[in-house]
Image: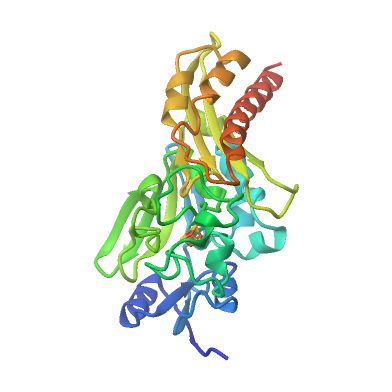
Length: 335
Ligand code: SF4
């Protein structure tokens, strides 16, 4: 039996100090990832610093310029928030398509952004090759079962897929992550919050020791207000994405696209912004032909492995369908 200490923090500053004083301690949010990893022997913290008893940091606030989500908000509360549903629907949709209702009721927004890959080799220590779990040991997925693995952003050291949904929507909508650490607070664009595996797949975020997420901020925009999230998976619920797309469109009265946002999930090692697709949409008519043409540019630098080549075409079709569905919804609402 593994033993660990459990401490309830009463303030984020206290939690930072506790984590700074014990480098093998880990922050605990809803526990929906960390407790799993402890059970399967991948995580072995000496102490859990429970953040969920800290007052504040669990509010959703929206004004004319931005949405601010406290790191301790529960997924289900954010998904159901009327302003999120109305002005940032891709975020609500991405949250609702993640996990199960029970898990969404437990999981925090900060913990959601920190979730680890579902690579089976990573989560099963009986496999000795995993550079993410044991740097320098190799990558069992490279020559093993890799149907669910990434085709974008991979390296020779790791091809693990980023598993989340929320961060894909946040990436499309230019969110910013607020952090607090021993040296004070700072912010990072969400795209910079997720690292490519490169030669060090064990490092997934540029977090400094004892640094914690305090909030996520998402700018208000016409694209955010007209956004959606489409998730394609092997079964209809409680499953990770084979491919997903967060899309947003601002369409002018003449029917041309003034601004577009596209990000992919389920196919890359981090939430994957598709700026070439956005550029191919901007300034052109919001039509099925343009959507198809632009979607063909998605996953352009894909590097498929033995079992996952299907993800390249699936990613393109997911983007096209997400754009078509979003555009059709808009037309319905305007009638
Ligand atoms: Fe480990 Fe990454 Fe390889 Fe999976 S893909 S076995 S997480 S190194």
